[in-house]
Image 1 (spheres, rainbow over the protein chains, first blue to last red):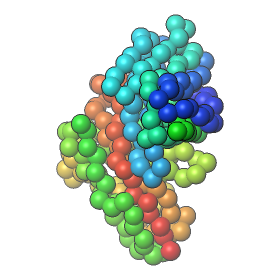
Image 2 (cartoon, each protein chain N blue to C red):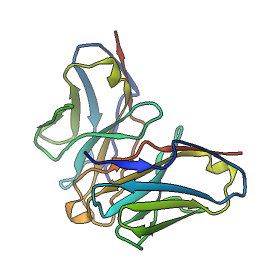
Image 3 (cartoon, rainbow over the protein chains, first blue to last red):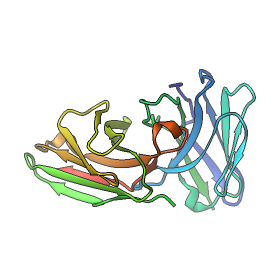
Image 4 (cartoon, rainbow over the protein chains, first blue to last red):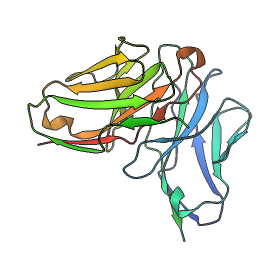
Length: 112
Length: 115
């Protein structure tokens, strides 16, 4: 599975958009990009995933560059409850390799 | 919404005890997983299962075993607990490999302390 690189920490003002970058320059054609977040003392929460097209759901938007070497998770109107560690994961579709490889992630702090 | 429920949020046990961690999912998922999460080490896969009565070792299976008697339930067993098994344990489930682009969904974790 491709390795990902994320900044260790970011701050965002409440009500503003939070843009979390992820670099995955070694991604291969059949690998999806997933985003999770983990709020202190809870399990990881799935946010969104995509292959090559931009995706949007009720939580966030995922923008994947055309060459697929990087992506950005966008929280359009960050709230204090969005303070968490955000993980970007790239995973292949091999049938017998179904686990998720979490790195260090980005610690997002939303400030009032 | 997918619901993955772990039986305990916090658990304290003694060295040498046999410890059972239970996980139940309500989405009829074939795949279930057990991870442990430690500071600086991220999530590490202990065991996983693709079907009832089926199990596969992950990256760190030593000192652990698992049981999957029913599709919705996946148990992690610490045969003889040791202090280095103090950790946050996370259970996850997902649809089968044929739909493997689908994400895993996690429970809220069990914070286990071995004294």
